[in-house]
Image 1 (cartoon, rainbow, N blue to C red):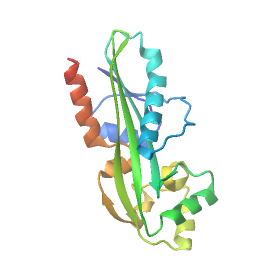
Image 2 (cartoon, rainbow, N blue to C red; image 1 turned 90 degrees about the vertical axis):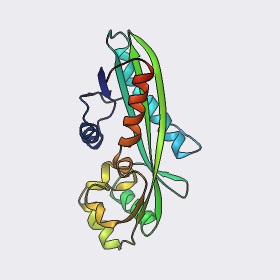
Image 3 (tube, one colour; image 1 turned 180 degrees about the vertical axis):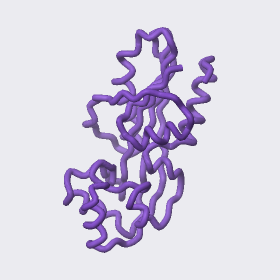
Image 4 (cartoon, helix red, strand yellow; image 1 turned 135 degrees about the vertical axis):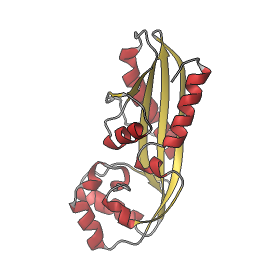
Length: 199
């Protein structure tokens, strides 16, 4: 079984390694400019586009191939927050999250190919509630100055320096990092079993 992670995220790479899988990384060039009525639908569609873009060149492979696509967004009051477009954008995002509970959605798409054909696919999303304590403007600007927020949805990394701002979490922690491991592994095993493929 060849496993391909269609993401350049170092955090997703670390999580999939933590789950014990051997895999390769191929970064997708899929168009991410889409609209969706709900954050869960948005991340599912984005993850599917990423997986499809990477799966294309492997459709002639004789061996079984599983492609994993993923996308994560932060949402508050129904508004999606992607990656900040600069330091001031990051400051604005963090101010909107300060002292409040927001949602983190990660969408995952699984594409299973065998003998050059797509034989099964599945997409799903997981949502986690995250509560941040009140942050002073000085704290926000210090955090932004570290550069950590700039490549992360919602302008923070729960596994990094932003951990000191997190007062509560309800749901899957790893989902906030970028990959809902428990749900992913359960669905992978089921997908392979249903299609007669050994892990």
